[in-house]
Image (cartoon, rainbow, N blue to C red; front, side, top):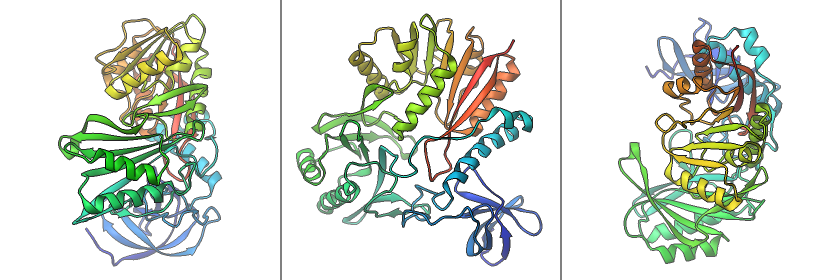
Length: 444
């Protein structure tokens, strides 16, 4: 029910895993409020009433929390990219640890004291600003006008000249690219869906990826205009097809330059095609690799397994420590990148397997295992297959506390693996997102 009439003065209690803070109405009903900070006293207008909770918006900060800070970006609260920009940095770290503990107790049904003991302090991986090696801009066309900008919290597109989170060699990169694309799209419909920029200060490379529908495209003209505006080492077009709810990559065209982006991580140079996933925080990715490999205690004669391996962020350093690695990845572009990266590094002790982790589960007995699944976590059958392995330990790299907690509970129900330590990492300052490395040891 939309109300917009009832108002309350409440105190913010905690942050949720999302853009909202949590308070309670005088009647004790849970109240979700974007933009709140624990310790704030705020006057709130109710915008939505449900049976078990309400949603509100802050009308006035009556008494600000000492954890509230002034955001460094003028678009904070408008653009959806940094929903915690108003929260003091050290408290962000504390809150992310609490979110992991909360998921373990609420979803994994773990004893609170045990969860508190298992979860270490959230690792601060580096700067709170300028940490991203990639940003994406939305493209929305209205008539003959195309707006290039950030996806706003309310669903619109906000035109921005820069992003404080982006670690670009040129602070004018976003503005320059937006201007070039605005000029190009003003005279013709490029069928743009979004635009990605990847930047590396380690290699000096900048890639521009134009995500478009299939069809005719003015390749040379687009490459020249963007190249004149932004010194890019690679300009590519990623062609998409299929219904919007299930878009898939139909192909990648190199419009200018190398046709891929190179980043250095954990001592390895990795080539990445535009559709391939790579952590947006390179410094943070290195911390995850070190935490996982050191926690596993990999030995030179170990048989290792790396599931959901992507283009090889964990695979390559794992191969340098283990005797042999079976690496599985389902996404075609990432599999191709993985094989090229292994060949470039001269690594021959890896079996790169393309396919679903459940269907193409390696026929081997692993001593150590790394899993880095997507947000949905591990499929139940994958948990069962991992449980049948004789491995002494699993390093579970998770981007979602809820699915991590669920999967840990599944391992424990099977009586196979149990967490020895869980270490949150703050790869995404100014947001609620948290990466965790859970070291699971064999039970018994």
